[in-house]
Length: 128
Image (cartoon, rainbow, N blue to C red):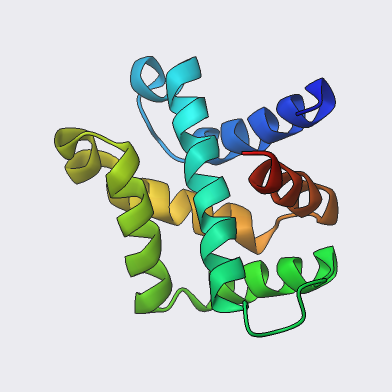
C-alpha cells in the first residue's frame, strides 16, 4: 500500500477516534488506530458483500452514497453489524465500555465521509 494512502487511512481513523470522548491513553495509541483501520476495512467488505449481486464496478460515489445513507439512518441492523465487527477487534472489557461510543463515532464519520476517503478505504480493502 502506498505511503500516501497509509497516511490518509490513519487520518480517517484518527478523526473517528478524536470525535468521541475516549481516553487518550487507550485510544490515542498506534495499536488502536490500526484496530480502527481494520474495523473500517471490514465495514467496506460488508457493504461490498451486501452488493455482490450488483455490478462489480461500482463507483466511489455509489459507496459514498451507501455509507452516508446507512450512517444517517442508523438502523438496528447497521448498528448490529458494526458492533459485531468492533467486538472482534476489542477486548471484552473495552467493548463493554467503549463499543457504543465507537459505533456512534463511526456512524458520525460515515455521515460526513468524503469521496477521497471512500476511495482510500476501498483501495486499502483491496490491498489487505
